Amino acid sequence: MAITHIFFDLDGTLVDSLPGISFSATEALARVCPGKTIPDFSPFIGPPIRDIFQLALQAEDVDLLDRLCLAFRQSYDSQGWTKTKVYPGVNRVIASLYDSGMICRVLTNKPLVPTLRILRHLSLDGFMSEVITPDKRSPGFASKIEAALDAQSRHSLTGTCALVVGDSSDDGAAAEACGFQFAAVTYGYGAAHRLTRPSVHFKLKQFADLLEVVWSSRTSSIGDHLDPDPIRGNTSCD
Image (cartoon, rainbow, N blue to C red; front, side, top):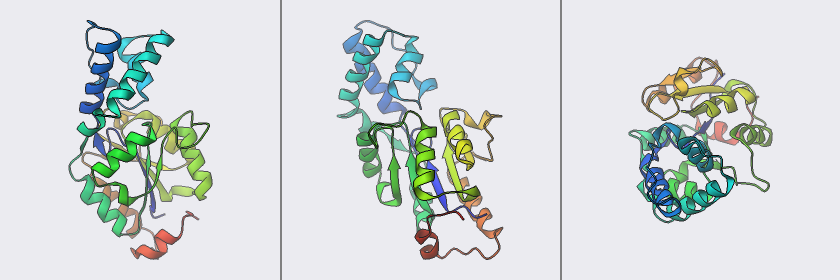
């Protein structure tokens, strides 16, 4: 079945967010825990910032984590997000997919406000039919799996016409929960390409490799064409 819907993780997939997250996490630590050694945050990028602090600092103190998260948000929402860089080839590939009729969505653990700012800043917002974040609704989504299942239900997505592209295990778990295919990027933070479970259907050494995955799925589907209008007008995978 041809792939017509793609859910993109943000951090470590479309963008390199480590510079901004490290900047704001360092500022938060300096404010809340003056003199504390700054850890390497890169192995923990992907989950919500509270989980990042908890893992990087091996901290369980609820009050400490609350104060760190607040300080981080104040820094990141004002300055940190501006340090985000788009990965090579992303804009070109996303534009090509969009022009072919692909329905693209962002599925991220990052809050809505900085996500929208980053997508707009990097000229990616116009290609996304939907941006799904934990705080997109109230009450918020408890996990990426829950968010993906909600999108699947709202858009009546079934079968292998939907693909999740990401770098972390939660991206793969979201794809598996929905019965979608999963493409793991090898350049991100989460090392999802090394997973044995959930299944990795495709491995992308560079973002541009996604084009071959999508075009191959279409040429192997009898009667499937690249006319944008029929694809974009049909939200179901049936």
